[in-house]
Length: 387
Image (tube, rainbow, N blue to C red; front, side, top):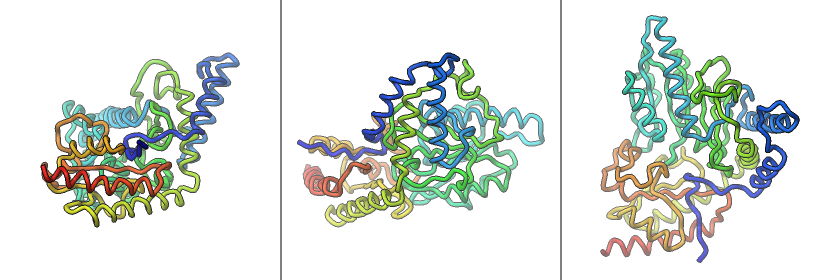
């Protein structure tokens, strides 16, 4: 039975070219990039070439780009070190800088970090979203105060795919002198991104979401922001992040980002057309089906559904047996018995939220194989409702 992989929001298939680049890095850049001998300097040159390539593709300076182990580390570094930095600054002025603003639909790596910071004295405001997952400019304006330390809002949601107005939110933050971090893990490589145009101060991304390897990511830190180190030890990453760099990962991520962003408007349009056809077929042919998230302002490959009178876990198991790899939402929350906090923030009942199905389309998926899930969905859902 041919398997159809439709869980690219959790992780994507690596491009074949990425594997070739990584193999070359292991063969030619095996030395430590911090070593002073010839082999080490060869690895250092390759590392900086990868950094420069990624910086050019994201439209920022290579001096503003630092490598991490992935999106979770980048998000932790951004929030924990921003809090540390702002607390230090707050002690020398009239404002406490003890207020943090995040959206209510952030990734667990943001929400759990904020929970830790709240235990350390942070006052946290969770921005609400509307029923389609959008944050309003007004809610941010109303939440900002002279004590606000920083704001963190994800670029695009990992479950429902809704894309947030980050540029507008950044403008509002900067008018008040507040820094903005955005988790762009789902957006990078899936849609055009120009950091210079985005008006954010820090941005997280992760290689395995756009055809690169796992275990490598990055954090953009705008020049002039002296963010304290998160991992301490050596002086790697210009003293900002200790630990021997993952050279093969960096070069694999650079190659994946290059491939993903080449003709990205055309690629996004093609994936979006397949996604829209899928949504139309599901909503037309399966009674009691509902699209979740914004119908237009969403990631090109994301289709998130809710179904009346269906247990989502059973649905996923039967889809897996039928040859389809899908999910209900965030892979980082897999195994949890808790209802998705994202769906709860949209005002969806616990019962309905437990019927969630996320189909996320990748570069290698054809329209024929994506649409082949529809009759299987109908068959499985019809059978489950009879039980």
